[in-house]
Amino acid sequence: MPSYNAPIDDMQFVLHDLLKITERDVPGYAELDRDFTAAILEEAGKVARDVLAPLNMVGDSQGCRLENGVVRTPDGFREAFDTVREGGWTAIDAGEEFGGQGLPYVMHTAVNEPFVSANMAFNMYQGLTHGAYTAILAHGSEAQKALYLPRLASCEWTGTMNLTEPHCGTDLGLMRTKAEPQDDGSYKITGQKIFISSGDHDMADNIVHLVLAKIPGGPEGTKGISLFIVPKVLHDEEGKLGARNAVSVGKLEEKMGIHGNSTCVMNYDGATGWLLGEAHKGMRAMFTMMNEARMGVGLQGFAQGEAAYQAALAYAKDRLQGRAVTGPANPEGPADPLIVHPDIRRNLMDMKSFAEGARALTYWGATLIDASHRSGDADSEALVSLLTPVIKGFLTDKGFEMATAAQQVYGGHGYIEEWGMSQFARDARITMIYEGANGIQALDLVGRKLAANGGKTVMGFFEMVKTFCAENKENETLSSGFIEPLKAASKDLQAAGMFFMQNGMKTPNAALAGSYDFMHMMGHVTLGLMWAQMAKAAAEALEAGTGNRDFYEAKIATGRYYMARHLPATKMHLARIESGAEPVMALAEEAF
Image (cartoon, rainbow, N blue to C red; front, side, top):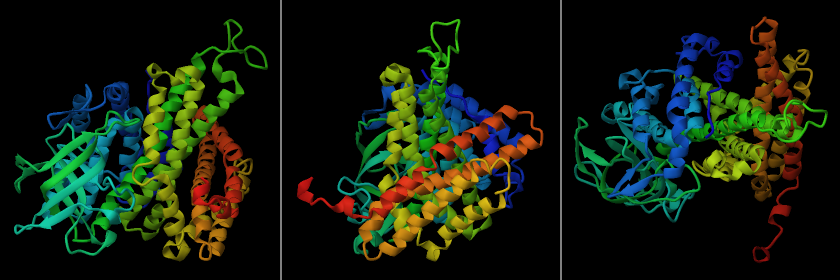
């Protein structure tokens, strides 16, 4: 069974050496000194290692089961949920007035990384609850906040979001679920939702479903969608539980992965619900939850890759196979460990350089959310909006690649269930699909985000890269293998954006056909920027006489690998984009 240890040193490096969180002018950041964050992350790491990771394969092999209308979770999940709940881990960044600890969102992000790496399916129960908390916080009435937020923060009650229906996924304008208004101000919700993660389980007293539905007589399409709070168990104004609501589990989906999470078909048969936010403004309220979820899914992508990488690294150091081409590295043994072979090193370096770059990008995104929410910084809000489809789409694509690369290090054992490697690949695969499939993320990036604010935000991003390169061109560390690759990749990305500007209006398919490549280009450029900044931070630490020289020297070497081996991919993506729509659309439908 794979073991997992939270990469505390690297997490601390990102928070303090790279992002320098205590120096940022964001309320709550001044208190996040190294000792404080280390204490939190070390405890979170222990929970991940000792409580959650041992249940990962248990959840995968047992799955959930539906018994008499109630979903039963795998052995040990309920006790583990109690441990996480009682430790206050579900309420890290919840408001103190609702029983939370009131820490910034960046700490919620950092704590969740080891939890996701250790047991992604398990962590989804609290992850969806956090999203429901955020949506009610942003759009709920004062009475709704007082009733639901303390219970969601503590996970005494958990939450879900219900969007998809059997006949419509991304195209929510086709939705059929109805909400009939009642005399007492409530609504009767009728319809069916599918793919509902954590839709039912036996680990909380109640489940608060946030359900999209249409009020009869409202506008057509997505403009007529409203969002409703529909609890599994009805309650009074004080939260005392009463009768079961008219909501039930139609079935549990049999899935490729995340078996430990209950993915449900939910039936609403005149269930009682209450409007959340304004009527016919449900998409705005739901996107509060969706945007947070997309950031969380990006984290899932690289966190699963990190766990797979740790297992592959341990195997590569232990497994004896062949001899190093330059001469025996283990002359006393019958063979050398796998890690001496260049192709194994390539796989490991691909994984290591991606995971560390992705961690930096995700944590940076979390600081932008904090700056937006805690300081009202509109520029940070615009920038994280631009980066969200990149974080979700690029990091999950590459995270899945990491999981399969880890399997490859194991060879045949990577394909055998008892070694646990296939679970990482199967679990990571869903991250590319849910919360908006990655093709949708690419379309969102190119079709909406590039033009947002008249293009000001993306131009500001280009200027950020340009300024960094100009200010650090004489830096001895960065001038060797960092600045020039980053400048070249950024120019490729700008050329792609110019191609869309010149061709998008007259040939819309040219932009759409190139959107996925653009998302990956921007992913590489953002990771290139992260790596250049991390190399600078590592060099400064070495210059200051740090006692952890090996860590910082490895950081710089890993960054050089990413810049040399991965950043040149922008040229390939640019060539694809500039080929236009014709190669993609040339075949007639009947020719397929």
